[in-house]
Image 1: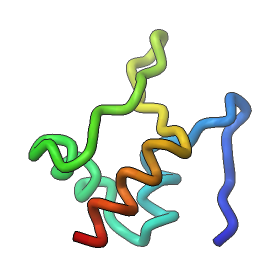
Image 2 (image 1 turned 180 degrees about the vertical axis):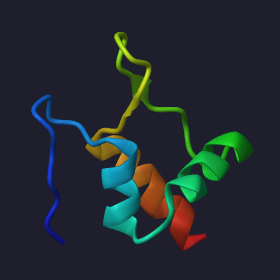
Image 3 (image 1 turned 135 degrees about the horizontal axis):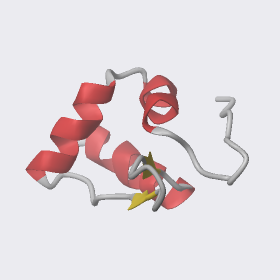
Image 4 (image 1 turned 90 degrees about the horizontal axis):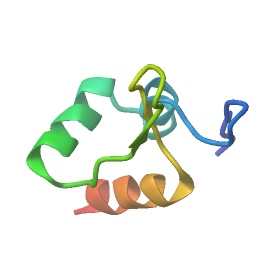
Length: 64
């Protein structure tokens, strides 16, 4: 599966949702329920920045 990264080598929430074929709201619900850990945030705008480690955690949570 091809993945598009931004310049910083991390993924934005919309990109992550598209990779997994889910709505961004699904990611937020998984965060709120504690199924996946909170990713780092951009200090300037507080957007979530997801790494490959975060993607692996999402992959595992979706398989449960």
